[in-house]
Amino acid sequence: MDASNGNILGDEENQSISFGSSNKIQPITSTQKQVLDDEKKRYTSLTMAERLGLPDFFSLDVWRASVGELLGSAVLVFMLDTIVISTLESDVKMPNLIMSILIAITLTILILAVFPVSGGHISPVISFSSALVGIISMSRAIIYITAQCLGAILGALALKAVVSSTIEHRFSLGGCTITVITSGTNGPVTVGLEIAQAFWLEFVCTFALLFGSLWMAYDHRQSKKLGLITVMSIIGLLAGLLVFISTTVTAKKGYAGAGMNPARCFGAAIVRGGHLWNGHWIFWVGPGLACFAFYFYTKIIPPNHFHADGYKHDLLAIIEALFRSEA
Image (cartoon, rainbow, N blue to C red; front, side, top):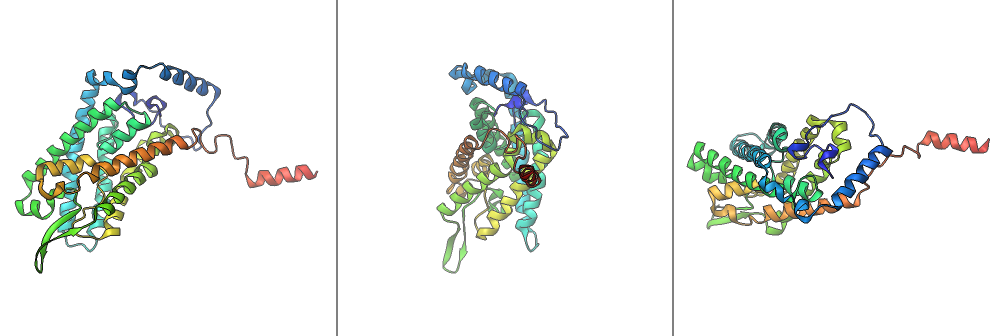
């Protein structure tokens, strides 16, 4: 997918999106088809350096956009980890439900805030998936992911500065955990999820996030039809829902739920250390493989809308055709 086609999660140089008010996705016209054919020919003539986007490493605009990813990730980590700690510390009956709702709201707001600067990724999952699909270059994705990891470290440091050492220890600084050491009848015991369970939850939840909401941002037709705020709200809502599902379906103490954002997990692990490194690779490998799986899915689905040629199987049309043939 090319960023110039109007997809939402593009780079900051192609953000001139006109969100239409049409209620029907229109089929591709002959003029649009010619433009796409010309764009395809231009793409096939690119050098390998241009395909990888190596000039992005020397682009001041790209590095300036990465500042948005850095600060956005810092604020995201600080706010999300604060939400995790505060809801688990509260006396509500279903803290994971409250936590999921607050995460959905926070994520939506932050994506909308960072979107005009860099495309609103603030997650290696979004940047890597966008690079695989072709919305941004792999070089830009590397710059963004590096900025996101640095931002996550800053966010974790800010959180550590404002919470007590007791809360930091009890809630692992709100980081991504698979297991935790707790006191038992015969001494300290390790509780949590098995490696395989945590890996598949990370993979499935990340793929569900990409499949259920991100394609709305990647597909220029849907992004124009739905609009920026609607798409970003759906992304935030689905992310919060997946956090709720992952924490509810396991109900295991020591498991913090699906991360779906390796940078966030990385920031807390760097600052807090210790058991946060146990199985940390899961929060990178699981989402990474989910991005590849989603990319292969985008190669299989039809390039045109399912009903781009009209609704030829409409029931009334069939009945009318039947009567015409009998007449």
